[in-house]
Image 1 (cartoon, helix red, strand yellow):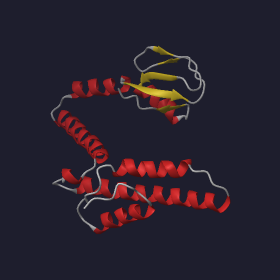
Image 2 (cartoon, rainbow, N blue to C red; image 1 turned 135 degrees about the vertical axis):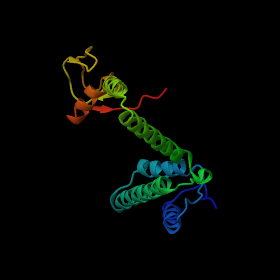
Image 3 (cartoon, rainbow, N blue to C red; image 1 turned 30 degrees about the horizontal axis):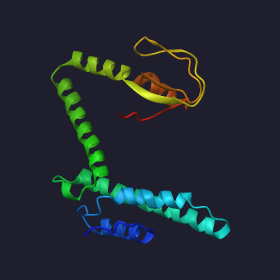
Length: 185
């Protein structure tokens, strides 16, 4: 049984209840997350004064909490299932599942290389990861830096976007000087 196309706080609450009451992943409308995003987005755009504004904020908070609960329940079920029912997974959940599969493959790769004495492979992998380039947006001005790949980067101004080695990006992110951004083709 699938949810109606329109989402409201009641249908969201009902979806969470159904999901918590079943051990398997419940079938829901394939556009559920997109419809939910539209619902919350439209709520956020509405402008009210006084009590109506407080009600709107409470609805947004409730919808956000219910959405978080629903996603966590469904992802937890996915990760625990041996035989995943792909027909009940939404595209967004398949995207999450794909990353979990990649994580398992990486664990096996590292484990295999470690127990089979392939230290050169592990060294190459580590160096490759350190110098893998990622895209970041600067939150503060930064002087020129020398990357893990020994190349020079910068200087950078606030809001600049750059592609720099992973190790350097992580250091800047940890200091709240930059933030990682997705740069998908």
